[in-house]
Length: 423
Image 1 (tube, rainbow, N blue to C red):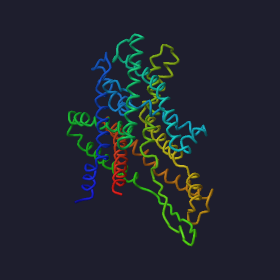
Image 2: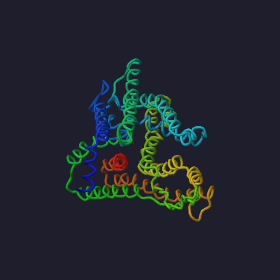
Image 3: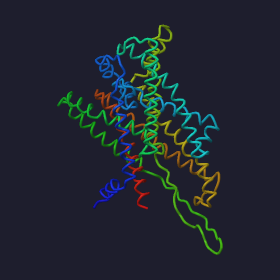
Image 4: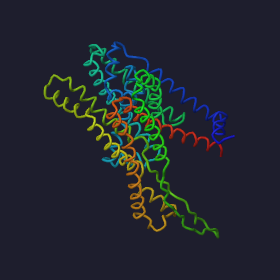
């Protein structure tokens, strides 16, 4: 029996692990049901036309778990929560108190930090929901709403977004994997049949080489993401020998694994959120009756929808967020302190500040490789889209990157659960 089949048998034979997986699958099914319950008063034909010509809306639809394309009650998805998490992560750079809460106060501090992110989700969800409703009204997808109806719709949209965040946290705690990432993953996978059918309908035999190139690029993206995600740089560590009660302890050698891509898929999500949120705001402000506000908004939208500007900004943001998230989540000073307390050292490097500086230098070089790789992979489909004119390549590339990273993380989480039960 192969190793894979043995693990699969263990998954289904272990009641606890099977229950966690089924619990996660059940909640993901609930999110898919929520994504098809629309808010009332929608012009379906205008909605389809609006989505067919907007890359911005299709990318935003990824974070809504597919709910935005139906204008469902969960149309914002986990977008407001992701934006709130980004703002809170940025605040840790400016506030030592928040940084200590997030990194040094243990599980209790992280729970308080997550609670602040949830609270910030509420005003952000209201702002995003209001801006998007006004955008849809301007495009004729939604009719005019009374103040009462608008307020009710905003509350429904906000409640749907918070419900998805709660479901994501339930999956994280009682299921397997990261719940928020799995909700985005489920939304992307749910759109695959529609995307494939659209490609089949619009299939042109003369475009066969283009489709072949797209398939090769997709396979290379999958291979590259797996390789870079799994790649690590081992730093050798030796434990000093200690004699206690006539016995000798320590003297062992191990290594500290530094991953090439410490941040995973988070920089992609951060970068897309930063790019999408201003577009939503400017789309709303472009409907303003104040001429200067409308003019500035039109100029900003023209800039943001320019393919080369968007591609360049996307690449830069992915690289910057890779460095930023790595700096926030991995503290060389803390690692150095822990090594020194446990009597461990890096051969040839003095303990303390010198060790922290050495780890920081190695991490900076590794992060550069991971950041450039993520940036290139993220913009490559956009470049192919501009060269071939096939719109689905751009969306598919971003979605493929998220899907592969989430699957890798999910496999690791399941392997960890299996290892616990084996021992």
